[in-house]
Amino acid sequence: MSKIAIIIPCYNEGDRLSPGNFLSFIQTSPAADLIFVDDGSTDNTQSILWDLSGNQKERLRLITLPENTGKANAVRTGMMAAYQDRNYSHIAYLDADLSTPLEELLSLHEHLEKTNADYIMGSRMKLLQNRIERSWFRHLAGRAVATIVDLKFQLGIYDTQCGAKCFKRSLIATITREPFVTRWLFDVEILLRIRYHNPKALGLELPLKSWQNISGSKVNIGSLPLVIKEIYTLMKNYHRP
Image 1 (tube, one colour):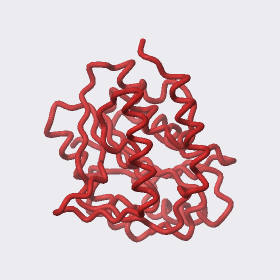
Image 2: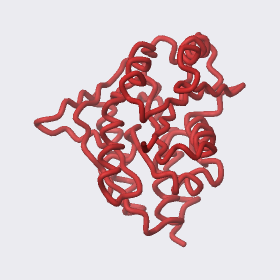
Image 3: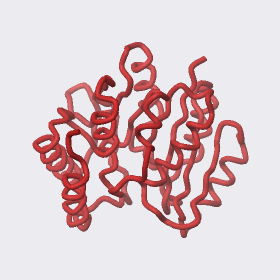
């Protein structure tokens, strides 16, 4: 059976974690394991995750970082840990608040397995038949980032920032080759690394059937200066070879 490791970065998520959803998922999804990375949380996140992983140590793994280093590094740390286990043919990541349901990520994985593609990403494209509940700010900010990134790098991707992506194991060494230079736009960095170092890799973008804006998100209007700075950082650090 092809197995997938799903990395879930967590920082002060105590009020937004849903332990029951994670336990139910692994009980009904034998091909998927969860790797939580606690990124130096200062609330009760770590204790919740310890209790959760204690129920299914082989399927629910916890990595704790001593201090907050950012979501980018937490995802990279989880990916490198999963890469050490050769049982995983695919490695993915997902937001801890489950704005993208776990089942949606599993559907992305199953779709990827049926194709000759090397990676797949969810897209929060609001279509008539889909249930996408996104705040006006996150929608506008996401469209602005995607448009600027596409003008500069021509990735041809509608939603670079959707936190639901799955990769074949063969791409992980490229993705994690060195620390990310951004904390928030690492999704774009991942796509740029694949393009520049694995140019023949085939990617897919698939509209999600469901995505919900969960209250308490760390992305808000105060994040704009940092996002603008990180776009500049990307432009400075990533050039066509």
